[in-house]
Length: 303
Image 1 (cartoon, rainbow, N blue to C red):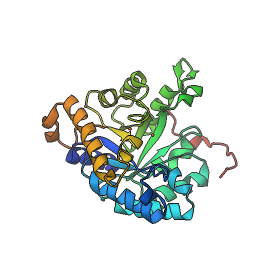
Image 2: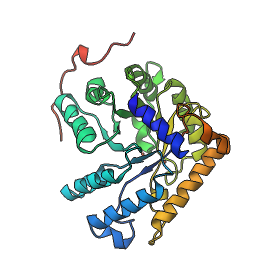
Image 3: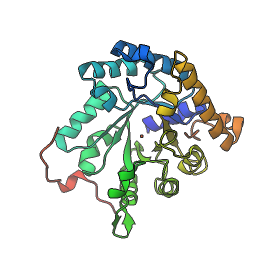
Image 4: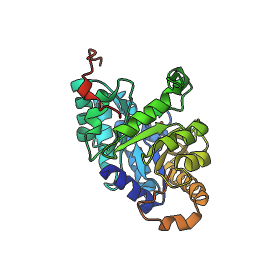
């Protein structure tokens, strides 16, 4: 509940439900900043300084830093340290593994990388998520229905008369005993987004796929929040992060966020929405382990 309350508070304070993805790609960063990790840090720092009052969260994708080796992980830590304490950090790593491996992943994400929320893959079941979910002061966004074309390969399959993504939504809702679970649902599947919102109860949704991936901002905002009565976070990355090609990149990013916030706020009642209490969220672009036999006590039984 702590992580959710903090997320709702910053949404209210900044009048924004937009999360900005910090996926640093040297091929797209202005050339003067792309040559060294120091330059990449300066790029990220300027973006954060220009947008910190226009977002409800930042979401670094760990892959963009891991591919740079040790320097990249050091860069990620430095960037996270520059994010204001009142703005949640969603560490996007889509982790999900068994036993002690999952516990180490949880330590790495929450303790070493200082994440407030993490993204998780539920394919291996409850015991692969348990070390994360048991951190009651932290939050988890669990993949439910993603925005990539390959989501049809498994997530749309019918199991006992319902698609797998519905099974995931129901399972996670049951696991959400401490009110620190959420679901990842792509903006490119708006009708399913509305359906999953009804299954998710009060769980927050993380909605990638707006902007460069073509998802509708308006539908993501309205469907993902059940007409602004539930909590959702809309992630944007490339369309904002790389809006400017020159040294005005930070100002351009801020301008793009202002446009997105304006569109959403007009849908939910304009300036009046800023007066909503924090509890009424202001909603807003996504080593191998030997298999273990899951013990029956590892996964709570559903009634």
